[in-house]
Image (cartoon, rainbow, N blue to C red; front, side, top):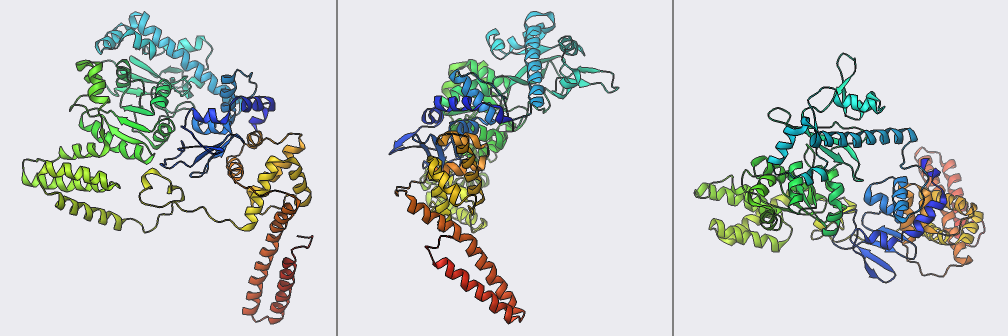
Length: 614
């Protein structure tokens, strides 16, 4: 595997420098509880902390979603990096010389990506230069200034201009020895239909570079000058760019998002840029597509609250309604900044100024429920009796979705005053709506991971952790000791070898034998780094969280090994019982009696707890 090329010394230096508490603390608020640190898991929604950091062992583990590992693994998970990318980032942050692959991909694929990124970065500079310094870009510059975009914003967001010529970028890139076929794959060029060459993908458009999380240009969005369709043309999806996984301005907004634990979602590039100039530095936008589950997950790893600030027209409000459940499903508190009808954020700032936008719109969003009620009201004429009745029933249905009785009471009281109906009648309708909703749901909820979800907390009691069979407990306790003591690992190797009954436990034992055979001292964080297997890393972290205060000695080791060795015999007995039943059913009583004798002999062996064979 590619990771093997990273020297052990680099990995060890990275782990020594990056303390697990400090690393996790950049993303999660941790509180000390005895020898552990606890906080809300950044990988799934929860209200009761189940995310645990153990400073002594330099590991983290979440009892809710099962994620666990060392500091490198945490950075991998939270930043969605490969192992080599996480090591490189952490090494650079610590000033540790890094040698090895920059990702988990092949060197050929890495080389391809680097060339495409270099081409995109150069193209962004080229378009930016054309906008600011040539007659080609004068019309585009005039348009931007008419929209209130300053030179400072043009520079910060690297806005550029693609001229109307068919092959200006083709010639620019060819002079710098970029392969045209590769640039076609990267989305910068288009092949001519007759196969005679290439043309520029973007022509006569204002160009907005799109960055990845590391601030590298990976795509473009081009806005047409004047009339025409499409108004915005985005780069196609490539090995660099996936519009469902990238958010415009995420690389600049992320620092403020993490500090404030809040993100503001806009619909367009101009909205993000104008809002930035107004002081909203935690604003991002999806790119020519509705917000996706991937986007919501990406945001949930960085913030706790999302404010939707979409256009004030019907399309913008409908988009907000579709976005709310995605964000709430990801566990984000969701609010909506309501703009005047028909106005977008860019226009509001232009008309009313930055301070008014912050004070009246961004700082005073409404709850998602309130927004749904506002939207529902627009579809009914409240001056008419029928309109008031229909709005009341629709509003009650929205309120009935709330799990909190207090919240339901609050909104029902407000609705009662608004439509001049008694609170009791509205409560009765709300009760009936909830009953109907409850009956339409499946009778059982089999989602094991929902027990500590914030939205489910009022509906379900946390389920108790499953009781493991004795042999699994023995295997886990042996491995926990082996992870922290090389001599125990050697004794287990000599007496048990690979005879663990759980597949993952057998794999971990094999890795441990090899780890100590290479001369390594016990170091659970370093051992986890050597695994490079998500499932085994989680299993190791889970095993290490076992709070076992029993004194460990050779007698206990022997008891554990005997318990583990019994399992194959138990399984053999069960198989023989099945054979015996089949023999009896077929009328072969001689065979059934023979098998019964074999079962009795095996059971006698199992009862002899001091038999060295076990």
